[in-house]
Length: 76
Image (tube, rainbow, N blue to C red; front, side, top):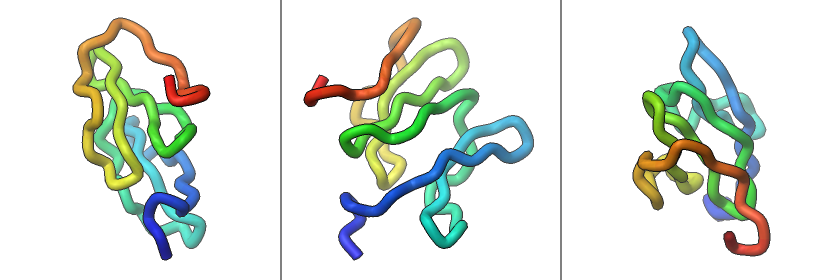
């Protein structure tokens, strides 16, 4: 399955957020202080007091540096 096309669901374990696939398998371990659902292949996540963005592989595409963040829309 193409990883870019898979659907990931937000999960929470022991106060941290991560993501699981449609089979319930954790693919991004819960390590974020807050997170939102993926939109356009990117998800906003908070680490400490700052927000950044990750891709569906769990890698930061924008390091946490912002006071606030919104889901992606039309590539922004």
